[in-house]
Image (cartoon, rainbow, N blue to C red; front, side, top):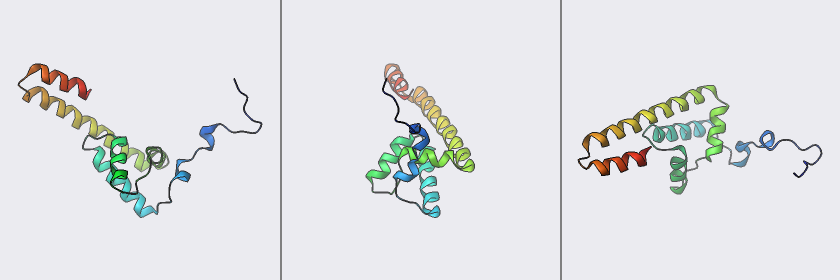
Amino acid sequence: MPRKPRGAKHPIQTYSPAKTVPWYDPVMQEQIFYDILREVVQGKTLTSVIEKGKKRGKPWPSVATFLYWTDHDEIWKQEYTRALAVRSEVQAENMFDIAANEPDVNRARVMLDYGK
């Protein structure tokens, strides 16, 4: 196992995603945060929301930066946690809809397995 250079810190201690992205003013950062949450509560994953936003040319942060924001703001952490709970409820309801409304049992099974 290679030795760490003398005086080197652990990589997690030195990594700050906020330093790797453009600076966001607080108003813009808050708008971006709530735009992303709006998509997450509709059942989409954080990664897909951010990638889709970047493809559309939106100045959205990386996933790591977004999670950094939530880790360093207690209110945002609570709101993101609630958004994840809502997303889970939405996904569960979508599964119930598939199970109840799909006439072909085998197709419903495949769709539900894919959604897990």
